[in-house]
Length: 193
Image 1 (tube, rainbow, N blue to C red):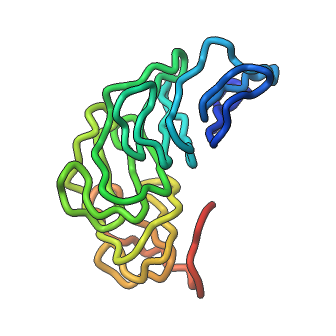
Image 2 (cartoon, rainbow, N blue to C red):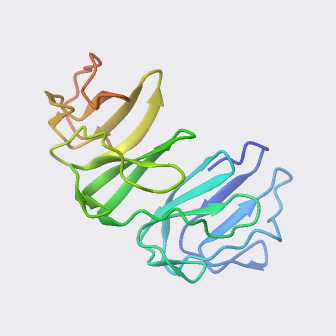
């Protein structure tokens, strides 16, 4: 994930980078050196990251970040690496993330978030992690997300989302959760963009 200053945050399954001990997370500065002061830890692999507004969101197979319980999803401070209180409880696997200053969108093979039934695509408050009322309900997993003007673009293996038939890719209204008029014709699952 780019850091907006020419560097990037990386996640994976590693124990060192550039001669520095790191546990699955690191920050490479714009000068291509490892940031010596950013060293959060994840106990298992980090598979997806997003930097937004001073926060680095993490997705992966982990159960702890910085020694705190964080199952598959977490947020750390982009400057210090400290864990943030934001910690939605997810039942399922999270594959994709997109964020605004107010809302974080999660896609995956998600069945429940914070104890509430959800259909593979969910929105949570960016500060508290509380599930929002937005419910587009995909009938199968969502693996790619991107924000556009007034809508969230979703890709995956679904055939129905936002109350409409949409095969593998759709635009979802950010307010209503309903499918937009965006309807490209695809013949197979979308994994990323």
